[in-house]
View: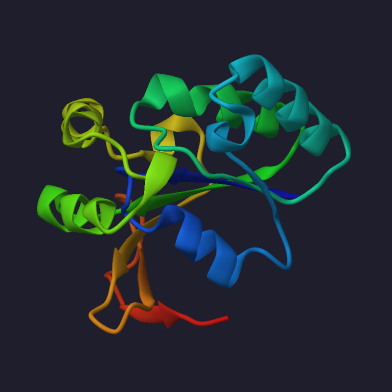
Length: 160
């Protein structure tokens, strides 16, 4: 039983990482799926926890208070709770966002606002493990342990 909470700016690679690496094993929950409805999302988070379904929460989750809405009930349900923090620069996210079309492309001000609120996840929030994620030049994802108690970073590439 595992709940993974993604954190990062829009266009930092969260959904692509989910599709490439977690689609076969984890349910994806995202506010984008529910037109921003926290009520609908909370019903499905509760159902995932009750049914003991491995789940990825694919939102920006910029602040600890936002992540707590997932971490607290998941810990109560005895899930292992893991954070993946997507480290991309604002310029990288702006460039990827500019390549998007339709509703997927958000105003630059939205990215800048999210960056102002962005707090890197910490173990004190209740996470069992923390990982930092970067996009390599070839488009693959580089995942490193993070947090004060993590071993020295040994860069590894996540592969499907």
